[in-house]
Length: 465
Image (cartoon, rainbow, N blue to C red; front, side, top):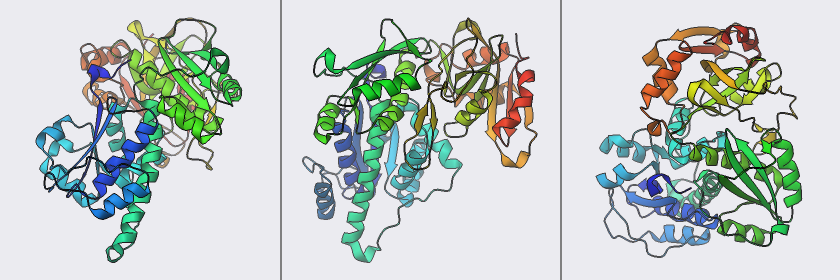
């Protein structure tokens, strides 16, 4: 499926003069995306300066750093930031906190989409992000509000300018490599160029809330990857069907083989664990892209009663939905821990994907299938939404959760932030309002521990029937 309206996701890297740090960021992020088969038609990376002299050359130190990290220095000329650039940009990455504040002062429309390079790296490093790229700025901004993040890295003093420049280059290279892996998995797909024969691959079909996704495994470790994938995705695997989307993933220990596969757009990694981590994002986003405008898709966990009634627990990424799903899923049917898809008539389409668990020793998360965690299955047949709850973990409330009914307009303001492609829904907020009213309104629940929600579940299931 191509980009929405055929328009690339646009990232603008900004500093004061567009001859130093922003150039390094632009060239290294481009390098890592291109190496993963993601070109400018899908993610466009450019740079500009708040006070740039149009046509100026990059600084000698910036050139040295880019070449040191394997980037290209060809064809660069500085550009001054314009209103048109700001209007067409989806995400701003800014050199320092001072420059970010100045960007927002001059261009208020950049507010909520602007992050320093250090903030950007910290946010992505600590956030379990499964969402289309166009939603990332809003998710990152909400996460930043909850944390006190450094606006720059710890660097050598300005008196040691050369050491400082090379330290910045190393940090930017590390951050852009990590981010390129994430974005390659979540970028809308393009046609992958096949390699080898069918006998060199293993393919399985996954049902993601009604979307059939073909997962195509390659590489010397394809059998291990396919076996691990079947274990993790067991409840989503289907025997047959016509694929609507496809994800190509490789595990191989040879760096040259990985590099060649990435250049074709394959998600390629040296180990199974890392492949499964990114596969979860890729399958989810591919499915979301296929159902834009036809389903209400919430960033929410879903649990089902034996009668097929479903309660959705809505919360931002990285705030405890998976833990909640693991705890409550031992007693109620596990529907999903991330994307709750709702069709006409409040019908819920199950998506019992693997649960992502951070083990503390790796930046990626282990993927555990619901069977491995002994989570209950929802009943067969139609699942129906009966309640939506905005949940917030708050240690100060003690063991008794605080539940409050929310006025419709107030609740919609919070709910809208957690809807994928809200702008593409028919009648947008009216569709959400009708859904909320059909289940008797929204509640907000503040809780200390997931287990504290268990006594509330019977009451929550008594929502609209």
